[in-house]
Length: 326
Ligand code: ES4
Ligand code: ZN
Image 1 (cartoon, rainbow, N blue to C red):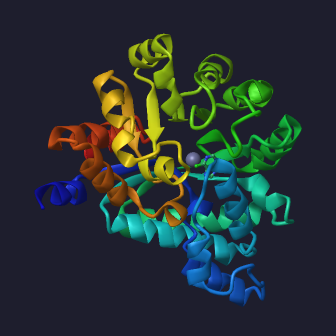
Image 2 (image 1 turned 135 degrees about the horizontal axis):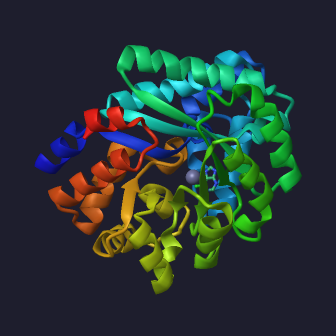
């Protein structure tokens, strides 16, 4: 149909993507085999059947298990390259990729092994597919702030290659205020700042991300809609929200895709964008997120264009690159 052709044809940017969450079961089994690691599931099919989550934590438990098979620079390269080849086929032209260095450091994988493999794939995809990128280092909020500070120290030789920092993992009980110190240090180093907030956590966590971390954008932000004063603040500042519809559905942040808050966000004048979050776990990449959301809530062609323009305008790409893509 026409709307599917529009979604495919529009140049798009993805702003909320955990590279470890793009780990498809087929590739996970292949890498496990060459690293002589036994997975807790017998087959690709058995693993896929386990992808049923009641909440964020149930997903995270599998996500951290999955990434355990990553060991060599080649593994990080293969993972990243598979994602970039996939989204290239969907006409995604700019990507801002999160990775969770602490999830690998705690298993004894060097910072250099991780980032070198990821960057090699990003640079090749830029050369071969014309995809521009920003790499975002994300801190795990279930760990102490001290661990984030240690990770920032390890990142210092790579600050030319790391554009921003994020905050992810278990939201409840780990408010942004816990990380005020390390994000201030990141800002002083010239890094851009984003944080997951208001996915499961309350609107107050979005306020903290804005006022205490001084984020440049908000990842998810769904629960902002519970607070009219916050809506006004997000609207007047044109703060970018990186919303992830299939993630919200699979993690039961929304009961049904028909209940998704994107129409309300657009109606309120918020700068919302559509993203895939962890596409291998949530059942869809960029175009599937746009298409299934469109089908569920009845977005117009103009809504789709607004959402994809928001992603490009709200990205951290160079201004000249944004102009090229708009
Ligand atoms: C995540 Cl969906 C989501 N929320 C929080 N942290 C995450 N890490 C990977 N995916
Ligand atoms: Zn996320």
